[in-house]
Image (tube, rainbow, N blue to C red):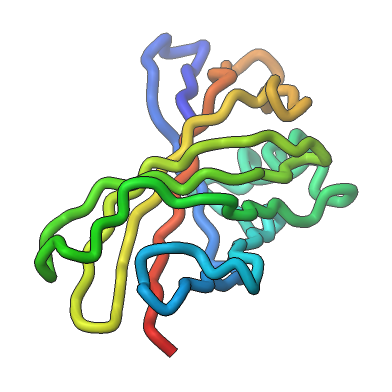
Length: 163
């Protein structure tokens, strides 16, 4: 999230992170499309988000109302742009399209993905920009000391291995 300290007037970017994420992606036998037989999704526990400032973390928890909405889930409906013919180790740019369930609101979203394949492992960084208002979230505030932009960038590191 972008924030600005009132006393300084300089913008900064703050980062929160968590490793509390679960999920699975199910691919068809060709390895290039989603399996129609299973739902691919991942779920994040936003209660575990931490930054370098505990008070900020508390305000984020309050804004996300994590006691009422303890998870955020993305369910994939389609993948666009994956090309299994691209050689190993070369970046592929693709999109994950699906439904993000955040703060009790479901929205169709598109993650921009940078993916790499090595053998039977695909590693990827997926990025999504969201507006808090689109999900019924009031941007966190800090008693007039910090102003927070209404937009946040979400990133998820994905690693898939052929089972």
